Amino acid sequence: MIVIKNEKEIAAMRRGGKILAEIMDAVGQKIAPGVSTLALDKLASELVFRSGGRAAFLGYGEKNNPYPAAICASINSEIVHGIPSEQKIIQSGDIVKIDMGIEIDGLITDMARTFSVGAVAPVAHKLAEATREALDAGIKKIKAGANISEYSAAVEDYAKAQGFSVIRDLVGHGVGRQLHEDPQIPNYSCKGNDVVLQAGMTLALEPMINEGTHYIKILSDGWTYATKDGKLSAHFEDTVLVKKDGCEILTR
Ligand code: MF3
Ligand code: CO
Image (cartoon, helix red, strand yellow):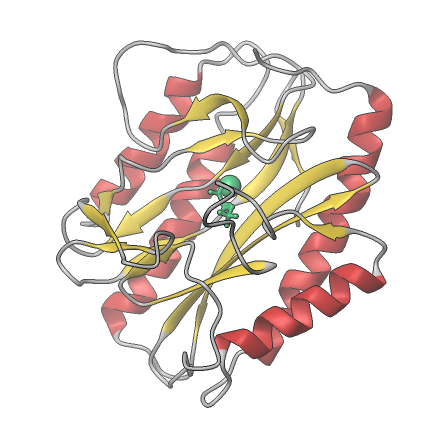
């Protein structure tokens, strides 16, 4: 079931999205060689607490292996859901993907950014830029009456034209009352289950784009996804509100 948000819920998500974007900015500014991903998580946790919100990822998932942190921090060939650790030290040349969700006034917003640390390889820079631009190409298609498949095709076409591949096994999602709501939002063209967008839907759009093949694997911690071929992956995510003539990006 796809939830249409009311005005009060939309106001909460607007407020939350702004706070989340500010926290993401602060975390991004702390990213530097020698900093652990746990230090980034501590900063994010403190900032969300100070804002009066709740970290939406903390405790998420199955009871026997709940997600243990406020942010996901995934480096280079790690795609998403990297668990912050004191042992994970950021180095010059890394691309670091930070993903965070917060709950403010009962409503959740979700966003991710790829940060380049120091001078990264040209292909890493190109991959991160292409992923950001693929998300923007997709966002341009979002409006009431459009099909999700128009978004999906725009993202995939853009990424492929840049010489990269689109992850198929992980998708975007509705967001708001819960972290993951219907509908699923693929970042590649796929047949069937297309959804017509309606004003008041709130969506987490999140292309994950690879340097090499689109295949992924999960690491032994049960959370971290990484590329199967060990090559780089990039991730950008924004929460958007579908409107009559377009969409409003809530997390910028
Ligand atoms: N943005 C991520 C996603 O939609 C959030 C992961 S939730 C976590 O998959 F708790 F698993 F980290
Ligand atoms: Co998400």
